[in-house]
Image (cartoon, rainbow, N blue to C red; front, side, top):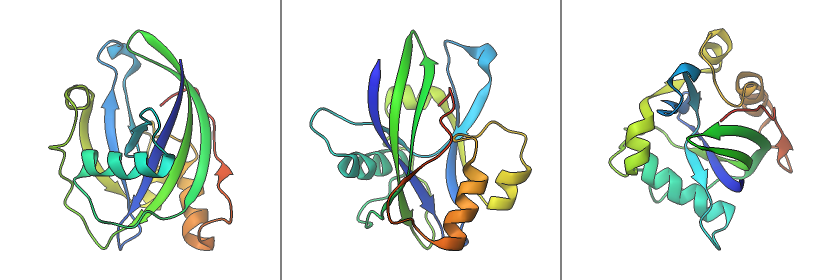
Amino acid sequence: MERQASRVLLLDADDRVLLFRGSDPDRPDEGDWWFTPGGGLRRGESHQAAALRELAEETGLTGVPLGPAVWERTCVFWFGPRRYRQHEVFFLVRVDAHDVDVRGFTELERRVVHEHRWWTVAELTATSARVYPTTIAAELALLLREGPPEHPHEVASDDAA
């Protein structure tokens, strides 16, 4: 199944990025992984609108300006009974701080997302946990050092969420 998605690099004042840990209940042997807030576009929805909607639903954060699109990637993965080929656009959003509110999760998200936490680049570099995109530590370090690129650039296109 082809799908378009928007993802958000939500950074706090300490340059930590918010990630969720989840798994596929239909594939418990696959383990779990960490990923950014975001999800699929609805019919007729722009990437920008989807990013803001997903941010509100998954974190409770509203009324923040959406920053630039900084990354893109295409990934192929199985979730439940379906195989997806998903093109993602990652938007940057900065906040001073935010207490994540997951009350807007869908029923599926409540089943598949187990926790969330804020990560530093050093923690991402050192972790043995699966994190997507797999190059997030290096890409985030570059983004923090050089600022947003003029145009989004391609990051690791892993075969996973």
